[in-house]
Image (cartoon, rainbow, N blue to C red):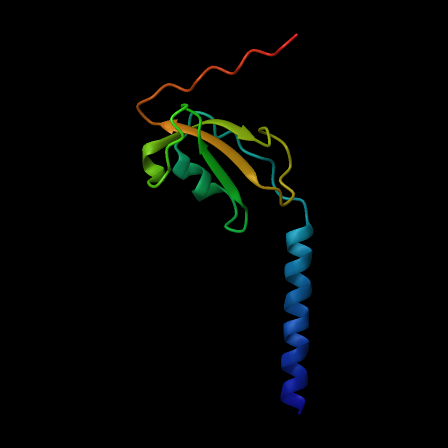
Length: 105
């Protein structure tokens, strides 16, 4: 009985610690533009959702991160990461990043 109480207390304490850690503001978003897609995965926390899309216009699937480089990202560099997903636009390493679409006046 005492063992069950200790185990339950440990589980509750661990859960509270996990929730507190996840809710805390994270580090500022690095600038990944021009870097390898693999750098994104090696830098951000494993719990962070990373949405990747091919911005070349070909809408290709990204199967091998080593072959791709980052052209765009959201949130912007310097913004504190607070559990939101990262949106990363990529092209193959041998390609040029597309120019941003002109803003409508």
